[in-house]
Length: 464
Image (tube, rainbow, N blue to C red):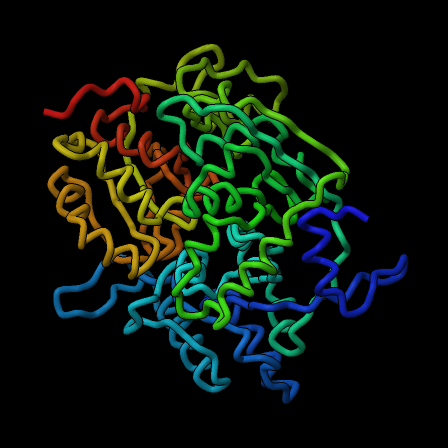
């Protein structure tokens, strides 16, 4: 019987089948942990006298609470004492249980959804969980990857499995040729705008078509990262030569790599397999996107007019964002720009931002920060001189971390400020109490930084 990519990976990991009365027990191949959602889980294990079942299947890093600045004396300016304690607790817990951890001294430390793939820990055919909703990022490799809650973090630490109902499947098919200036971030924002923030609820998404096949792994991770913003359980892209080339030679790559690639290639959805739902889009119809409201589904082409509010909820969102239906977003004054996060902080994103900033200056009234997603991204960017281009423009080049995406490490906007951000969420106050967030690609964010207003990067002429 023909099977989808999701079905094949799911079936490989069912320990106890699902029944009407009970979810399936699903084995987990890789458990990623960080300092925010793990302390309580380790406390429960300690109270119950339990050990971590598979420390070799667990990988830890510090990212959410970590400052992106370093004091002159080399110390770390944690935003609160609690933030520092979270980091200390993770390092102590993982040392106690023998879990590989990438702390301050590691050349591989970084945002969990950036550093995991860089190490080759993320592989096709895996089941991957993390106490973070954007674990869907790892589906770019053909893995079933999803976020879990703190209680579930404890369950996986203790028994390396999880209870889960099997979701339905949805194919998102995008074929054709993307217009110049359209990025993977624009593609996923266009998809969410089309199906809505609840459009993927109850589904596992598979992104199909030549648009995704032609994307780099960095681009595929950006797309899958935001699957959760459409309400989906996970998002996946079939592994192919692009995937295999990315993983080859990385730390956790299988010893018999040719055999592994042969197996991974077999995971692709079979001809004749059926999905519970299919959504199709034309690549030619997608333009550079921005959000105008308070969730990612309120997104539109940057050169379009803000839609008229259809109900009180939308009207409240427009009011919060201080925008008016029927008017343009371009030209709206920008206070801050954030280029980073698990969505857009990989090396290609750094190159894209530097490409716009090169030879230009950040507007006087704008504070712009560029935050690489990992130490490896930082090292590679600096080897290419991207940090010099970024700093020459007047933007700040920071240390790796989640930074302003979630605004829990001290990087945040002031009330009322408008932020153009390459992150993934834009609800009211996401980047600071009262702050207003516009989601966009690195190119659009960089264009806003230099122009001081929301700007279509395609309209910028040659740099001076």
